[in-house]
Image (cartoon, rainbow, N blue to C red; front, side, top):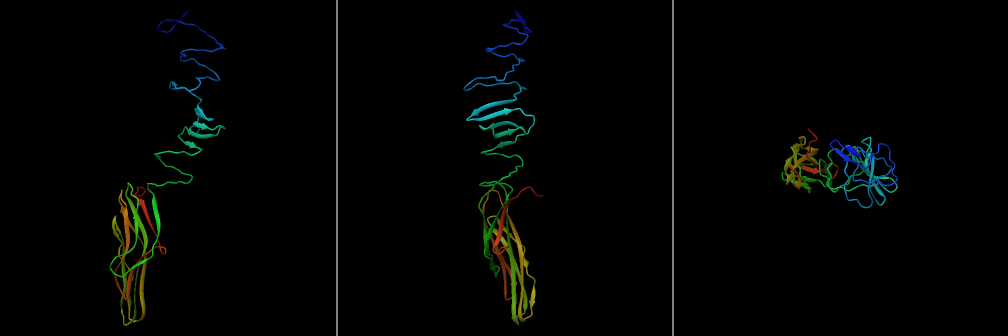
Length: 289
C-alpha cells in the first residue's frame, strides 16, 4: 500500500482512519505537524537533560514546571491578565517566594540583591531607604553651633567656616543663613553727635567671595545733655556661592564694621537661633524655571 505525498508515492507502514488504543509504547523519530497528542502526562526524559527544546511561533503552553531544587519549584504560565504571575517560584508548602507579572512587576518576598540597577522612571519606596551615599537633586543640610563675633573696625573678623568635603559630578549651590547685627551708642553731657553703625558680612574661600549689601542702623543724634542714645539693627541674611562640579573646599564667614559714629559702634555675626545656624548644599537642578 502506498500514499501520495503531493510529489510522489511512498510506502507506509500503517494508515488508521479511526481511533487507536496502544497499551504499549509508541516510538518514532518525529510526529508530523498537525498531529495532536492528548495525555495527562508526557515524560520527556529522566535525570539531567542537556539538550534543547524548540517550539514554533504560536505554540501554547498553559503551565510548565521548569525545575525543582530542595522542594522549591519554578513555573511559567500563560495568563489572561497582565497583573497575574507569568513566572514564579514556590516554596515546599506552596507559598510564592518570587514572581514576575505580565506587566513587568517583580515581587520578592525575601528581598533581593542587585548591582548597578537603573530605574528609568519614578520609584515609590514605602519603607525606609538606607544608603551610604545618594547623588542627585537632594538638599544636604547641617546645623552648626558657633559663638557670636564682633568687629569694631574695618578689618574683617571670622565667625566660622563651612567645609565641602565631597566632590560631585555636577554644579551645586552652598547656602548659609546667619544673623548680621549693627549697634552704636553715645552718652554723657557735652558729647553731642550722630550715632550710627554700618556693617557688612561676606563668605570667602575656595569658591570665591560673596559680600552682602551694606546695612545700617538708623542715624540718631545725641544732644549731649546726659543719658545714652543707642541704635541697633538685626537682620537675618542668606549668602550663596556656586560649588563647581568635581570640586571641594572651604568657605569662611566674616563680618566687618564699615563705619560707625558714637562712643561705641560694632558689627556682629551670630547664629539665627542663639548660637545655632544652618548651612545647606544642593544641586543646581532643572525643577524650577
